[in-house]
Image (cartoon, rainbow, N blue to C red; front, side, top):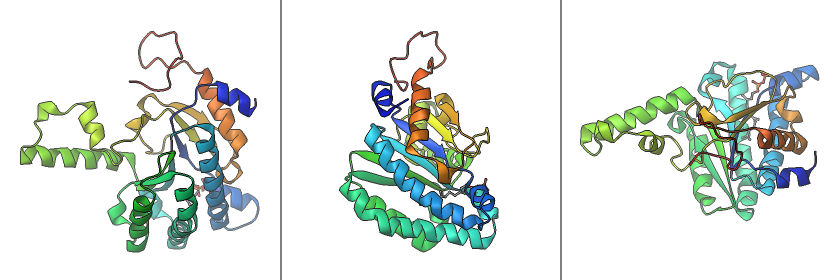
Length: 250
Ligand code: FPP
C-alpha cells in the first residue's frame, strides 16, 4: 500500500472519526489521561492536513460528546482549554490552507468563551473552499435528531411546513450542518466496535473501519489504510448493484 494506491482508488468525500483511546494511551505510558488528549490534538492537525491533501472534502471529528460531561471536572475543563488553544493557534493556518471550520452539537450549552471562539473561527474561515473540518463538540446524534424534530415541529406550527412536506431531504436540512456531504467512511481508533451516538443519521450507509491503535498513534499511514479498505468495499445502498463507481448515494 502506498500513497499512489490511494490516489488511484475511490476517495471518500466525507470521513468521520471517533478519536478514542487518548486516556488509555497516556495511562499505558504512566502519564495522566490529559497527556493523551494533548498529544491527540497534534494528531488532529496532522490528519486534517493529510485528509485535505488526499482529496477528501470533509473530516468530522468526534471531539466531545454530550455524555463526556460525566467525566471529572479537571478533564472536561482541560479539554475545553485545549479546544480554545487549538482555535487560537490554528486559525491562521486554517485560513491560509483554505480550510473552513464548522462545529456541530449543542453549542449553546458550551462555556461562553468556547462557544464564542468556535463561532468566531467558523466565521473567519467561512470562505475556505478546499476542505471542511467539522468538530462535533457537545455532540450527540440522538440530540441532533431530537433538535431537528423540534425545529421542524416549530415550523409546522408556524405554518411554513406541512407534515406531509417532511421527507429525508427536508429533515437533513434541519440537522446541525445542513450542507454536510453524505458520510462515506467512519473510522474508530482504540478498538471498540460501536458508533457511540456519533452521526447516527448520517452513518446509515457509511463504511466502517476500526483500528486497535489509539488516537495519539493514528498516522497518515492509518488514514491511507482506511481509504484503501474503503475503495475495496462494494457499496450497494440496498440495491443489487455490482459496481463501485461512486462514493456516495445521489
Ligand atoms: C476519547 O478518548 C477522546 C476524547 C473524549 C476527546 C477527544 C479530544 C481530542 C483528540 C483532543 C483535541 C481535539 C481538538 C479538536 C483540538 P478517551 O479519553 O475516552 O480514551 P479512553 O477510551 O482511552 O479513555
